Image 1: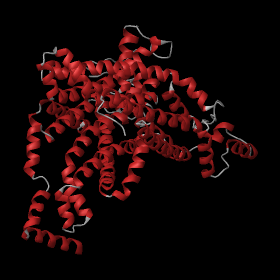
Image 2: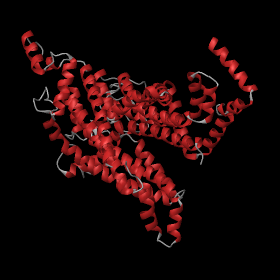
Image 3: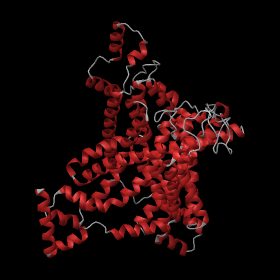
Image 4: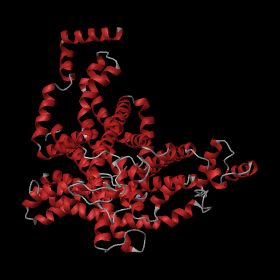
Length: 306
Length: 306
């Protein structure tokens, strides 16, 4: 409370004294109209909008799965097993006679949620560590040393080694992915912080005696938001892809869960007789990841117009 | 140059030392008792104690780490609990397939990626460019295991041109190599395109064209040479992780490579093998990246390492 009060005073002071007024103007996070402009630029980008539409369709479809799915997720019907795509079953049935389309709708919830959770957790940890590493010279070395060690291993191998410790399962796969992708956030964020920590406006707020934590959250973070947003969008796709790969290897979500990677794995055994069992779930993964990549590319262009 | 190399090797050793600690800790944390796995369901107390002593598992963990590290320095990666074969021997048996696969796919990915990326850059904003951008993004977004199954379905099941799985000479590596190359080609094409677009705008390109040099030679001689550096970094990273074993692809095609060995070892809780593979992968990964950094000087004489 006390801290807040003194901060207000400092802010008030800055309004009256002329040298710090300059600082205050520059320090202010990008105004709302800035983000509006970014959104406008993004909306004009056709490929990015195509990506957004893909994601919207999948999100709505999966969210309303109980409403649109023509069959219950687990309904087995041995009479109809391995049925080719047709009018009764849009995308065919699997080896238990379950409707692939319905399972895809439910499975998408797992994949999208996996992406959301891993990106949120990884970015929270990664951005925090990156900001600290970029701002505090004393701990920078330690943090970056640990990141270098994590980066010294190919990401999938690292994730698999972690799952070997934690045991297979969707939650553990997510933990493994989070640990494997944190270094990429730390690297990007640290580089950004390093580049602006010496800028005059940061010097200025520091000279005003504002506490580090406030400088980091209010003055540094808003100014490095663009690359973080782009990275998060692209990592969304990467995380979904990684989770699907782990499930395909039997290390993530386990059948009979309709997770897309696990469905591709189950379908592998029936590839000769029922290609639709693995081709359609794989197609779903590709489309969603493509959606995030298109959107991420578009965001990068919109946030950094040349 | 020598001093630079020395410094790089020193920091590499530091990172690898960190990797040994990470691997050792991970492996210590892996649940399940290898002794029980070895001795079956109902071993006698004496047998357990004897096996523990034989494997050195009765020592405190810090002693085990130093004994692991000491052996490592002598080039001894330990012996597999399960097969009784030295880990080196196992890696030697499995590495040739992984190496072949990595070489074929990186060559394929590089050739496709650079050619296609250059064409896209030269024809910027035409339909050719858009097609390249779209398909390279598709290559990145598609899960490797799905590309693999798709290729198997078409070329093995439908057309019977290539074997479904297993290793039987060069022929059986065609589909796995294409699988791995597609994703890599997408990344390389994107990087080549954007790097080339930066270079095309440079004044020396205009000068070269103004002095009457043919367009293709300007693009190839002046353009590619200057655009290649970031592309090489990417190729190096990709090759490094391919050498660590294409875990998913090797599994799909039932190839006896390093990646599938890692998965098997984790399934059997074969601790020395897991340790050995992960360490071997980290060394290869690090050396590849160092090599790429050194190669820069060949392509760009302005880069000098002091």
